[in-house]
Image (cartoon, rainbow, N blue to C red; front, side, top):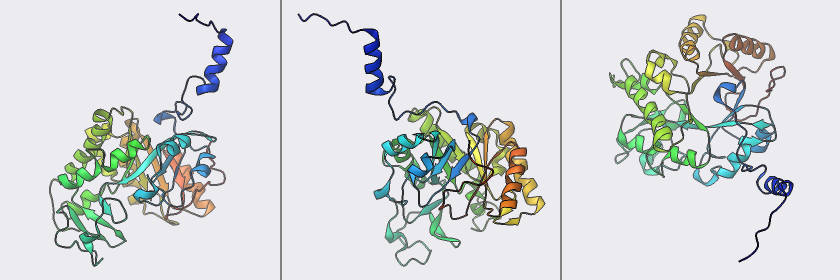
Amino acid sequence: MLKPIHWPAGIISSFCILVNAGCRKPEEPDNISWAEVNDFVYQLQDIDLAAIGNTKFDLVIIDYSREGDEATRFTNREISVLRNSPGGPKLVLAYMSVGEAENYRWYWQESWDADSNGIPDPGAPSWLGPANPDWPECYKVKYWESGWQAVIYGDSTSYLDKIVAAGFDGVYLDIIDAYEYWGPGGESGLNRPTAEQEMVDFVQAIAGYARVDMGMTDFGVFPQNGEALSTCPDYVQTVTGIGREDTWYEDNDPQPSSHTAEVVAGLDVFKQAGKLVLVTDYVTRQALIDDFYAKAEAKGYVPYATVRDLDALTINPGHEPD
């Protein structure tokens, strides 16, 4: 039998630090809670993880992929490094559209609209609707159908599973307001009476899958827009927070006061429930940026002003992240 070696405590401690940085995996960020977030960055194109990592933003919203496709997906290591980056620990959300399908994602098949006229061809999934005239690469979806929901969550090949596997802290869900398109009086003409509740159910199912089925108990769920769903208490309790675009300005033009008042009334419900409220206005003039930040911060919201194409890392003078 070999005689055991009794190392001095100081050597053991130093060895532990050298091997795994204080008995903690180096990719694990310092603790930062959703409640501590007081600034964020939102960028979906031309993403430079190192540049973002050098900033002091608490929260980062990016695509799960550098170019939006499967080949350029961010790795777990890349996201882990970003979460514990030189600028300080960060929470990282992955953008995920749940109300429209995008024709550059891995799940898309060219045969669904082979002639690219924006109208699904015969044989396309029953859940696929027409292209969005403002964003031709995006197609409306009947999000209540099981086929589309299976694309979003449910097994290792789903969108949500890919995001979790990459190490994101949560999801930023876009086109939540699709229920307006399909619901009574909406542009689709379908006048589906259950459209609103089905979006609520969909978001709750996404949250439940991540937090319960996948064991990610603190997984962040942030819908973008659709603040009118504040009338659904269960929905408000389910989400971690909410994002809203164009609250005070549409580009550099002031929004009608009636629009802002209606939006703020909905956002305030989330705020009063202790939820994080993120507001993005696409203002580019310094005076308007200052006004936007002042108004948002007075409401207790977390503001970010940037360009609408979301292809730039914007740090606004006077409003730098801390």
